[in-house]
Structures are given as structure tokens and as C-alpha cells.
Length: 584
Image (cartoon, rainbow, N blue to C red):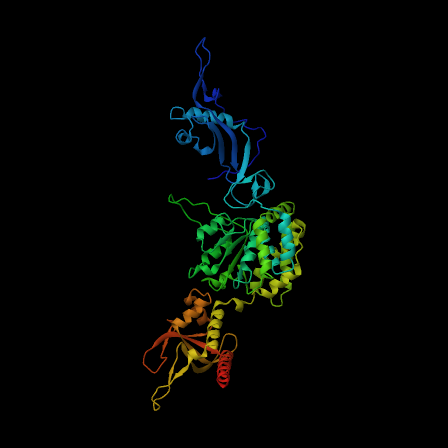
């Protein structure tokens, strides 16, 4: 349940009913009795006085909290916050545990005394959410301090600006501008722009996946992104999260207008996070009911989210095809110029954070929303025009890239930072995978298997000679074997004259090492591509890998002729190296 402000009443409390004769007198609360004829009115004290020092209004729900002041039995001054919903004869008795003098007989009197003070108590405003919002008809931004109205953040996240904006800005100019980290910073700041325009410009949240080894600067990039709005360190109060956290915990910390980072997807092991990634991209928590079968209010957020991993997040997802238009993934990019530069970025971000997002939000509140949307559309069109090959995938991605480029452009006036817009656009053109084949999970898995075979030819055909010279040569195939087949034309026009039989355990090991989490999804795609040879009702086949009669379970895959040529080349190269070493 929540209320909404629809009108400001200039005649404060005009219709508010006061309780005549109830109040505070000589340090006690109570009421004035109604005197009989020829008698004076007397004050009936009921307990030590309780004053309403302040009324705090949550601007998102309009719920009120009364800040109460009183003195306990030994004269200690006390202050406590009491939800106004506790002003009932039953709930107000909870104040007794803090030292307030109230019981069943005096509860009604205390409530009336507090209500009589409300219309004179100063009002302050608070918010627990973040991002742009409406209060009445006023559009404003909720950060640590609201921009556009007087309100203070009382949530759990560390979004209070810390250190100096100048020091953070100087670090950005020295270590970030002119490098690929510009893409990270512009993408992070786009969180504020997305939240500002989302009611009128429908787009999914911007999700960036940074894939690479531990020395690529991924974590430093996440630190920089989060430092624009909050504490850039993994903690319970930070927007720097971890995939080790529960799905519910991650979603509940998502906040509008402030960039979020999630570190180390690889730590998940075999957990599938497809549902989580869809939820983050859509910006809406799944609907659910409480024990009373009432719908629970869900978290909605409009932002940018940056993720790091040592393996492809897209390849690890069960619903790969749908996520490829929602996640902008970059593999093997060197984000930092050096280890020393990375250390300087981290140090500056940890000491100076939370300044850029509020400054950008303040600038946006002074802009016409229509002109900003037009700027995003212009950059989206410009990006598409710069591509050699356009397709539906690139068109859908262009909307997000247009927002990032528009953010980078307005950052000059909003933050005093001049981004290289041509470099950012070129980076997206060159590094973002927009060819459907680049994203096809079946093709990527097939290439991983063929790469394994090419690198380890002896596992697929090694001669074992018996001590008896009269015995035939026995061939033992440790991981599988390659056999000729009728020529077949494959999906990409290439030809295949051979079939690879690979053991089930070897196949699964390859997929797991490359981050593919569901072999059934892969096998289904391989069958659709015509690369898997199997009966219609099953994926697996059986074959003998030695001279014994034992049948081994595995999979049959067609080998493109170019793949076999590469395998033969690698095998020849390996043999030559061994031959050379023996000659030495």
C-alpha cells in the first residue's frame, strides 16, 4: 500500500481535526478536565511529556515517521523514530520498552497529544530508492541528496559522494580518456540517461560483458564504472556485486540511474544464470505472491550493468539466442594500459567516488527530454550507417549504442570530460559481434571441439604395437576417431568427407572448459546445423575404439574439409618437431 501526492495544500492543516484540551503542561502529557460549575479546569497528567520533534515523509510511499523526544525515569533525553502507523491504542504501547510512560488507560491520551503537535512540527522528506521520479508534478533525481527538491537518502547503499570530484576527474583525464576505458565510462554514465528517458524511449537496460583473463583490467573497469555513483568495492552497501550472491540479493540491489557491476561470472560453476540475465536486461523483478496471496511489490530499475568473466557469459547461457541482443559482449580486450595505470585508477576511485552521476542528473533535469531522445536516435542511425553489413541483430543493438554515444557527447558540458566519439563508435563497430554466426552457440561449440581435435591428433588415432612381431598393429583411440564418409554439403556451403566420433566424456569436458553449461542445447543446435549425425530420437551413437568388442558412447560430428586439413597440418608439424628433436 502506498499513497501519491496529487495536490499541495497551501492552507496547511486547515481540515485537520485537533483534540481540544489535550497537550503538554509542565513537562507532562495529559488533558484539561471539563470543570463543574464554579470549579477551575485542572490538568490531568498521564505521563512524562513526549514531543514530536519532526515528521519525516517517505516521498515514494508517503508513509510518515514521527521523530519523538522524551525523558526517561532518570532524566536521560531520548529520541526515537516511530512509524505513524503505530499510533493506535495497541501499537503505541510498544514505546514502553524505550522508557515512555504509557499504558492501556493512557494510550488514547498520548495519541491525541501527539496528533495535536503534528500540524506544527517541521516536515522533512526522505527516500530509499534511487533515480528519477515525480513528487506531485515536480520531476527530480534521487541521489544521496535529491536534486529538484529537499529529500535525503535513507537507504542502505553507499551513494554519498566521497573525496573530491576534481581528483576523480583528474584521474579520468590522465588514465581513462584516450583509451578503451572511455567505452566503460560512457557505458556506466548511460545508466543515468536510460533512467531519464525510459518512460518515453523504451529500451532494455545496457548490459556489458567483459570477457578475458585476470590481467586484462576487467575488475579495474568495473571499479571505474561504479565509482561514478557509489562505493566501488564489493561490500554489503555497494553496487559492486558478485555472481556468488543470490539472485534475489542481486536484483534487490539494482537501482535506477546508478551503474551496477557484477564481478566474476566464472565463480558460478555450473549454475545457470539465464533467468537472472533476462531479469536484469528487462529491468523488472519477477512477480510473486506473499503468504496471504497478495502480489508483492517488485523492484523495477533502469540502468547499465557491467559484468566480468573469464568465459563468455552468452555461451554459458541456456537461452543464448535471446540474450545475444540484450548483452553487449567483448572478448579479450586490454582495458588498462598497464598494471601501474590500473593501480592508479583503483586508488583514485576508492578515495573519490559518487560525484559524476548526480552532476549528470542535474544537467539532464535542465534538458528537454525530446531533444535528448533525438540525439540518441541520431547516434543510433550514425552507428548503423558506419557498419559494412547491417542485419536485424545490429539494428536492435544500435539503440543502446546510440544512448552510450549520446551520453559521451553530453558529458563534455555536464562533467567537463571530452570523449573521443569517433573512437568509441569505431570500437563498437570493430569489437561488437553483430554477425549471427559469431553468436551461434552451436557453431562456437563446434569450433571448440574441432580446435581440440586439431591440437591433439594423437588422441584420435595412436598405434599400440604388440611385443609379438607376428601380431597385427592395434590402434587404440583414446578420445575418438575419424572415419571417411559420403561427401555432404554443410550449412555454410563447405563440404565434408569425414565424420568424427568423439567420446561423450571428452565432448562434455571440452564444453565445460569453454563455459558451455548445457550439452543438450549444444547438441540440438548441432543437429539443426547438420553437423551432428544421429538418429532422430537420440543424440548419442556408439563405436568401438579398439580391437575389443566394447561399444563406447559418444557423438558423431561431420568434419569440414578445411578442419581436417588444419588437423593434418598440426599433426605433421608435431611430428616434424619430434623428428628434429631426435636428430639433435
